[in-house]
Picture 1 (cartoon, rainbow, N blue to C red):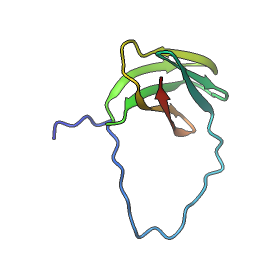
Picture 2 (cartoon, rainbow, N blue to C red; picture 1 turned 45 degrees about the vertical axis):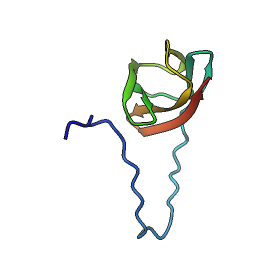
Picture 3 (cartoon, one colour; picture 1 turned 90 degrees about the vertical axis):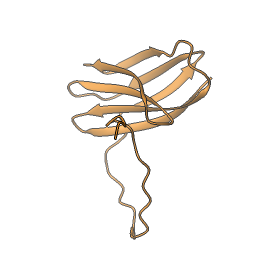
Length: 101
């Protein structure tokens, strides 16, 4: 198909009998002010990639980072909506959802 390979798919599998919790702490948190998304990376060993997806899984922004700290992504004229922020590190892939005001 012509779908983007980075689009995500929600799949429900009723064969699951338990939920395993990983002992890896989420290394970032996100919030928004006006039309800006702020990503505070608290723990980063090496480089990482930050991706912003809309609720349909389309990638809207992507940036490479190489150190922990506060990052700002301007969303310009994007409408108020729910967005998914993904942080890809060598420890794993972490995601948070947030509402852009």
